[in-house]
Every structure is written in structure tokens, then in C-alpha cells.
Image (cartoon, rainbow, N blue to C red; front, side, top):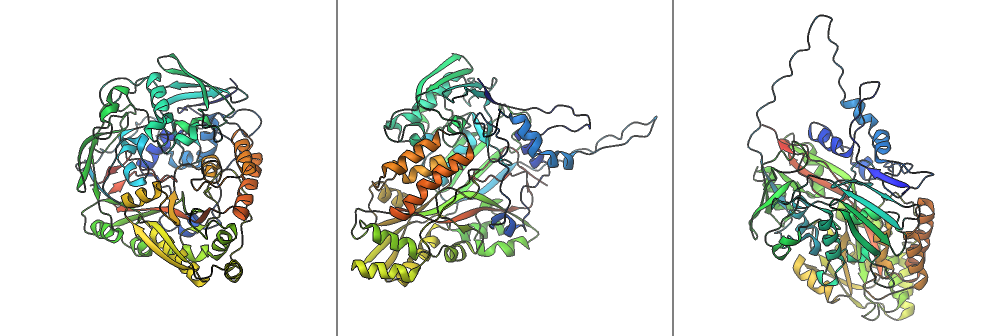
Length: 583
């Protein structure tokens, strides 16, 4: 086994400082660190924001000559944080250091979150929308986690993993001493069971596609065996240089087999919070897992998730002190919130990309020239202003701008006059087109912006904004001409590019595009991967275009200034184990 990634722990340095691993970083964040300054909106969201360093991989998928461990990554990427957070105390000879000040007494650690809607499903393997993930993301955990500094996957409930040079054989070492909420220790068998459950078509997991070959629909795993109670050996049918990404909690949460029958109503995981109570449309309550493996975490005793679907009402509840935290406050309100001393606003570039699907099942959308005209009609800069008040950025693919894999994309230009000429030549000027919108966050506003652009070139476009359940029902039945939603999970172009390969739900396929995507998935070198994905996207955007990306949205939260230690993640996941309430 040549490539290796493992957990790092602080070790003494000559200067007295210590390297900072992801867990240490989260704790540092919790005790006074800051990820994004509230006023840094332009730097955080604009095109000039610095890209994360790509020179030193941290997982078992090396992109440079020779393997690099997580320890090297942590030392390299967090030196500044370490130096900034290290305090040197000089003590005069013959005296003793003064005792530390007493820790302030904390108020009751019960936090109230204003969330987008009522949680409908607690089974993390069966979820399809972000709202349902808010509670399970606290209840469950995976073998790997996304590092908030480098945007790479690092060990969490795994102690380490390693792969062969050809990425065909992998070993995952599961952390000992992790217990499910029912009191049983987590083992390698639980990881295998959870993985096979995601793979099972009957489960209906949205992430099953990541575990199978795009062309054959066969499992990537040739064998998956427990060598002992905490060691898993895996052999693959084809190389996969980033296998650890498939063990991220949002993709493959670890669950105990004996509790699976009631997972949707009584979820049992190994995360920092336990399920306590759920009253539909009223509140979901989680309580502290006092047997969590991470020392001194979590700090909060209880999390109350209160559904408030309307974003204006959520903000009003925050200002009135009825909730302590909300996600994605109205963008137009962000400057005023920044000026409010009682509220803390944080904004971070994210993996959120808004997009549209065009269905060739409905003429004249079966004509690729008409689909091309639609793509040429969309003003992405206007969509960013109309829906995100300029806080996002135009998007031309489903791959988020934060991706560590460079893409060189040349899509059809924004050309409304050229689009109208195509529609006239095809004899379809003035045709009716319904845009089915997912009425969550700003997605409806993106649809309204696109509809305005289409109307300007002579398409009679209207928007049908649907509540989450109705949207999901129409989406699954493909009962739509154009439908918009957003992608959040995954930063790597591999899973995102499945949208234009064999995973295209509209039925559009191109063998050459699929072959490039498949080849890129087996390559470790980031530049070669970028070249292959760029070839696939450029051919697709200029010839197929049943999928059109619109804007990349930032992640924003607003909270009472008594909420401390909440870390921001680009995938918009919530991690509450390091948070607490200040008196």
C-alpha cells in the first residue's frame, strides 16, 4: 500500500507550537476562531477569491510525486492559524505563572434553529433534499469528512486509510471506541452493511450512482470484507483514486443494522447528537450524545429545529429573539444585518450550483437547436444580481468554482439576438414553456430571472413554483418541460459530471462524453482530470445542452451574537458539536 491518509495529533515542535489537525481546527474555531469575516463578501464570493492550494493531497489519491499524509497537509495549511492562536507567557525567575481565570458560567445550552421547512425523513440513506438533512447530519457520521480549510476529505470515524499504487485495493481502519446511540460499539461490519444498503437499488439512495459503473450499473466493489472488527479490505473492478469520498456522511452514513427498520422514525447513529422528539411542522429536538467519542464535545445540550419556510419570517424570528440561528437570510438584508451589533453574519463560497434541466420529451425541446437557443438566452450575471444580489457568480457547469480540479470551459455565448434568430429559423418563436421551480431558498428567483430572459427572445415562459414535495413528485415522474433545482453535495467534478453522462435523467447520451468522464474518474493527476472533464463539458454544452448551470451561490448564515463556535463548510453542512451559547 503506497498512498496513505491518517489522523494527525498535535506533536511538540522546537518552537513550542503544534500542528493543527481538523479536529483541533474545529475546536479552535469553537473557542474564538473565525472562518470568514462578515464584511468580506466581495472576496468571499467574487471571481478574485483565492483558490485553495492543490499542491499537497491529503487522502489516498496523490496528485504529486509520492504520497502526502494528512499530517503534512495540516502543518502546511494551518501554520498561520497555529501561530495566531499560540500565546507565549514569560514568567520571571523564582515566580509561578498566575492561575488561569475561571471559565465563565454558561447559560443553558439549548439552541433554536430556524430551518427552511419541516423535516420529513430521518433516514440519511434515503434523502433527496437539503432540509431533511439538517437533523440526520447531527445524528450520523461517516468514515471521512470534508476539511474546512483544504476542501479535501480527511479521516473522521476512520483512523486512516491506504490504497495500492493502482488504486484497485484499499484498506480502511475504523476508529475504536465509537458507540451508536443504542450503546453498541461501531465495527467494520456496520460500515459494510451501510455501504451495501446504499448500493441496493431497493433503498433508493440518491447517491447509489456514485458506487456503480456509469455504463454497466454494476458495483465498483469486487470484494468488501472485514479483516477484523475494525479493518475493512476492499478490491475494486476499476481504479478509484478518491474512494474515501464515498464514505463521507452525506453519501454513506454509518448505521447499525439492528435499528434499520425504524430509521425514519427513530434514527440511531453515532454522531454528536441523539434523536429526542419530532412534531411535524412544529419542532425537531435533538439532545447531546454524552457518549460521543470526541472528548468534551458536544457542548450544546439540546438543538431545537423550528420550521419557518418563508425566509422573511425566519429573519423576523431571529430579530425578535425567537430563534438563535438561520440559514441563508434574504440576500438584500445582508448589509443591514452586518450593521446590527446583535447579529453575526457569515458568508462563505460554497458548492451550491443552481441549474435547469431541459426535457427532450416535449417538442420543440427535442430539437438541439432550440435547446441551444435557450442556453444562449440566459444572462447569468443578471441572474446573480436578481436572485443573489451579486453575492454569487455565474456558473457554466455543475462543478463548483471551489473545485480543486481546473476546468477550461467554452460554452455557447450569451447572445439573445442570435437565440431569437435560431428560434425564428426553426419556426418556434412564441412557443409556450413552463419552468417548474423548486420553491426553496433563492431557487424560485433564479427561475424568474431565466423566465424573463426567455421572454425577451420570444419564448412565452412562465414559472410554476412548487413546494418541495410537489416538486419532487413531478421531478420523479419527469412531468416538466424545464425544471430547476440545485446541487450541493460533492466538490469533485466526478459526481457532478455524471449529470451529463450516463446519469442524464432526460435520456440524452453521448458515448464519447461518457467515455471521457469514465476515464477521468480513474485518473489521479488533477491536470489530466481537468482536461478530460473540460472536453466532456465543452462538447456537451455546445451539442447536447439538456442541462444548463446558472449561478454558483454562496453559503450565508445569520445568528445571534451569543452563538459561538459555529464553523462554516462549503457543502453547507451543519456541524453543531463545537458550538455553544455565550451568556
